[in-house]
Image (cartoon, rainbow, N blue to C red; front, side):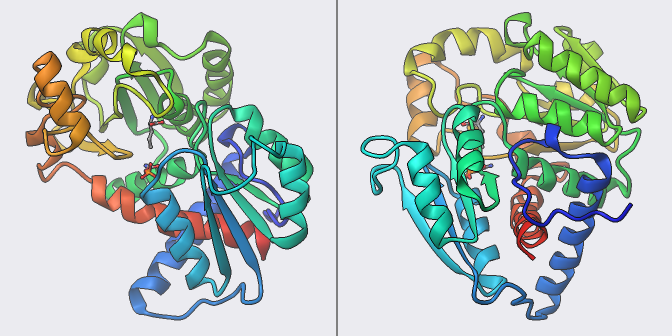
Length: 330
Ligand code: CP
Ligand code: NVA
């Protein structure tokens, strides 16, 4: 059956079939080729989108803005504190107002329920630009990058090291399961994904010839991996008071030369960014001073190595977000 995503929201990968994700990845590749060739693609001229950010962002915001402009659209960006949303106006009312003016709405915020509520009321497609639970647009960029590097997805062995129950851990588990990639969460038991999400992922994986494994053992978890992936240890919205315990729990799961040595020789390193791989950030410097940890989830050596594909991932955010906007609005 042909894929038609017109009018659909993009809230989490659980709502999308492998064929629909395949379609978005193919579309993103076409957009990347066009961008590289300098071929104009102002297919959505006359349309307007609004971007709502209740948490900070570099990649997601810029990807939506550039994708919107490349497609010929008007783009409005509202930061936390610069609109009435949440404080003086409910999500439901905001959604109904913005849905009257815009053709699509991007939302980055806290609980997943909020973006789901926005989509229920808006009457136009809503795109999840990250919630505490999921980060679906990041998934498309990650799958695209893996496919560019290996030429295929099905059967790859993917290991996520770190906080496996944050938005990235949750999303990567579902993304891999959907596309037939063998997923391993290599993390302390306290930070394993929620059991009901693991069950859902296992079911999806079994339908797509993939698998889902949870392990606390770094050498078993990294063995023969094609991809080692990590994310920051404390996510946006978490209190500073969790740092000490998180460092204690996650230090053994740092992606370093030893972890990479356990993976395949051809293995790549991935990270959604931003990353604390040195002390050249305010938080990085503060944590180094307070806890004596100058490199956190990944060492600078691995981050800067030829096996690191993190900036390709970052670029692919824009091409894949363009695909999502186009597919749902065209
Ligand atoms: N990876 C990602 O979502 O980056 P930003 O927080 O900069 O948008
Ligand atoms: N887990 C991170 C992802 C940032 C892209 C956070 O939510 O802060």
